[in-house]
Image (cartoon, helix red, strand yellow):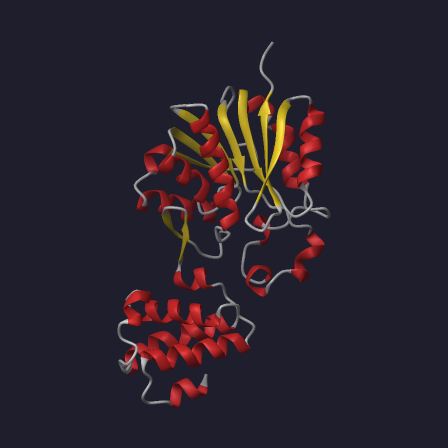
Length: 297
């Protein structure tokens, strides 16, 4: 970083190239891309605008804005936390260390819910999102689907504050009901839903050392780890779902690597679910488990 401090004629292109190599050396994937995002943020512009001014010299003030951002990324702080935002489907969400960074796999979870709703031509639905974090799933459902309301729960008060701000920024706050508590505890007697969806913690406690520093050292552990086998949260959700799910309603869960078969069998063995099936993510891994509450006789 000392080179950045003493170099007096940094152009946009030269700084991006140097920073990209610097981040690569620190073990950051896609170092140049992250450098572009950070520089655009420091300059209050877009990445596209950077391309249009590669030869422009940066001012001292711009370098002063950029330098600490680059330092943070070199220490493996996630790009989204540095920028304070993350894209998820059609939304841009505020994120900080109180919430997980939304991931592409979870977009597939939302896809599956919306596809089931469309296939069945359902309207005016009410859904439950367990462990909402930033509110990504809940807000996407009301933004893209015919959901009149989503109840979204989390055990973290700070996470719910982030989610609430996201609902206000997206203009969707009137259709999402955020509640503090664990699993089904925040629900009231008689509440019932057409959809229960969750991206719960599913990493085994002992797997932390195998995670990238961006995850292990920065993202909230309570949203990552779920006991010795990583299945504690999924079991709790699966065990408690039936009383709150309408007959024929959809339970949609994101699961970890190698967990789908177990959760499918677990759901089938409860006797409360039928048509249990799995969907794969973009890498071909079994990632989403879907099941339907049995119909009343």
